[in-house]
Image 1: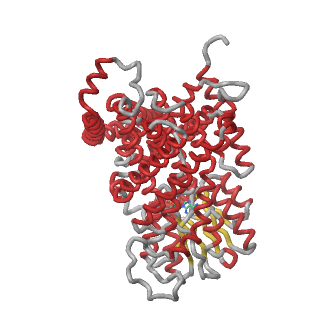
Image 2: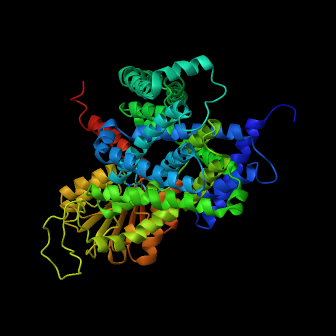
Image 3: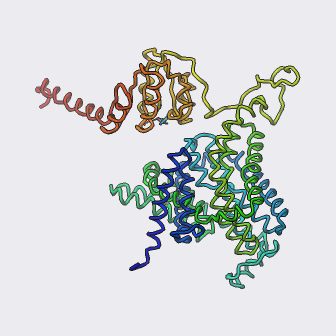
Length: 594
Ligand code: AMP
């Protein structure tokens, strides 16, 4: 080759193959991320053929993690984080402790040292941000209460891992490992002089310093920069500002304060979300974020050596058991103990039953400190890949187990057996117990018939709903934003919570007996899917849909919409009406205008 093109080759091969295998996976109804992982294994060093640069791929993946955490920060206000601390903090701590103990047990059975077991167990205890967010986004759960608890829980886990990364080198000697060779002896001595608790204190001080800098300076500086750039009117500069701030804060946090890149990016996003421009900022970073999170999965696949699994399957089963079963049971019990519904506990358990990027970082550190044997890293990698691939199955299982667990528990709050229901026959489960708030559950079918189904209750749907109500027409609303659902319920309007594009949500609205379907959502792809299903269930239903382009109008009509209202056309009509009215007034009363 004329010059070094490793970076380009890595990006092209990574994205290209990820696309091919992602599309293939999608064709077979498997989550596309399985395809990305397979693409990674294929360009990795453990399979024949082209081998992409592993170190570069990992750095590219790291950018994906930064952008993802930045996105989470944008959607996550400090208020939300504090509102879930009561469950997220104890939940994460107990789960980490439980997984670490299980990891220690398994490593003890394999004859490893306590230090190795500790690193191994810790690595198995922390879930992957990328996998978790993808799972929540796919199910539109980021903004639900469950989503907030899970993300808060994950942030506490991340914080604990930041601490572990700093503490491990200091404790390596005590745990039977070695200090890293490259560390200068004088720095080592200096560090060691502080003692273990000194190191803990320094770490905490660094994190605190970072938070203070962000809250005191970042909070003023970042919105100021964004407002300044917004006033220049340049979209390109604005995009650049958002990216520069996200990456810059993450990098600065990691290098100046020893905080993880992900956590730094999270804070940058959180600070930005306080400014009104946050939504624009979020949209600007979306396409890049998606591309880089794909590279994350490819880079994980690259590290995988399938032969280790086949040679010695026992330990990998043990590892997988800890990740899938051990962690889930711990999370489930904690969430239930806090009085949340079974569905919430199951979703949180399923979301966290996987491991990812932090586990790899810990494994690398463990190896370099001579704490973890090579086999440990392979097990962590194998466990990560298998648990990521099996994650959708965990969500499926959670949905399947729910009715069974609920009937076993009679939906009673588990922590205090209050004298709720009168005693039923011995052996029978009381079913009249108070059910705690159930948000986002599989919806109950409506009793309405001959009604109107209104999908989406935002700027458009709310106005439509108001008129339907005034006209006395029976209707129900399908909406997936929890805040809107709460408001609708307070107003006494029948609602179905969830994504209407999902069959079980839509079916609950009884479309086969409905008279009219109004799609007041902005996404034509989702509307198209819903229309097709509505037509199949009820050929005579009247369908009115919303669109924003001519192509969308055609698409929705071809799928069976009775009428499609294009927003932009109506806006133009409104504007023209105003102009004509003003002109007519001028013509009609020329004398008054002198
Ligand atoms: P607006 O664009 O302001 O009219 O808002 C659209 C509304 O539709 C928002 O409240 C969204 O939460 C809601 N929405 C969008 N897509 C869906 C969907 N697939 N299922 C249910 N609600 C949706």
